[in-house]
Amino acid sequence: VQALDDGSLKALGRQHSALEALAALALAKRHFDRVSFDLIYAREGQTAKAWAEELRNALGFAADHLSLYQLTIEEGTPFAARHDAGMLHIPNGDLARALYLLTQELCEPAGLPAYEVSNHARSGSESRHNLLYWRGQDYAGIGPGAHSRITSGGAKRALSAIKSPEGWRAEVEARGHGLDSDETLSAEEAADEYLLMGLRLSEGLDLARLAAIDGRGLDETRLSALESQGLVTREGGRLAATPSGRLVLNRLILELAA
Image 1 (tube, helix red, strand yellow):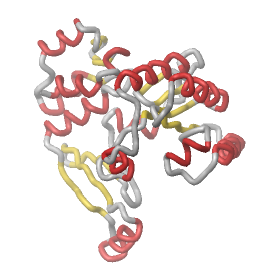
Image 2 (cartoon, one colour):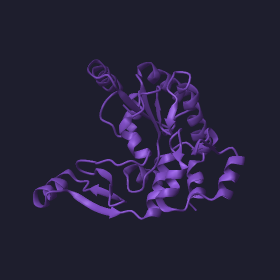
Image 3 (cartoon, one colour):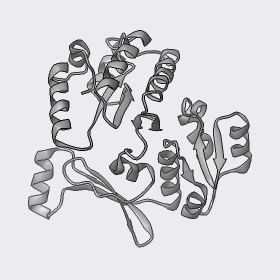
Image 4 (tube, one colour):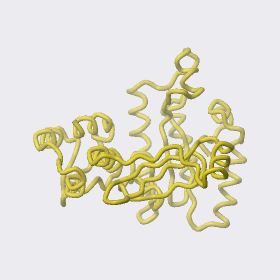
């Protein structure tokens, strides 16, 4: 879906209209028990008032799951080129923070709390597919541009497929697969990845499992300092970012992985 007004959809480069997206959502609800859709916020020119109105509208259409992503600028994309040229302006840090907090304030009373930084669900309706990523479990991605994590011989393999559909198909026909890379992660890389993914979840990560991956564990001094600042909590052998910690999650990960 990505937006509920046609002007924003056009600005995002989407070809569908809001009515077409909602019609597709209604069709999906008629045929599937589990349905989710996504919106992008912190868009150019978007105010807190406008986002609140759009999100309230979206919650009226939501079933048991909703993905809400802040617009980010990725290098090498058309958005990045426009941003670098001064043709695209996204909300500053203060407004982005306010929009994120507003998102939580509206979703939680609606019964869709965040179980992950950008994903909201009723209890028991969390995305089983995506939880595999965030919990550091194995998964196999099939098709162009797909990524996989497979444990083999006690080590984690990171595989990625060729992005181009035509190139992927040609390689499958020629070699029997369309892999672009197949790398065995070091124990430290695997631990950092588990830390990065696990802290995105409200349930956090298993500290004993993290320590077992590379034998290091986390620095107690740093952990205690972050706890005293109200940014993380430890309970039952698990480490989780607090609501305040999620606002500075990149900083938390950098400090803990150092």
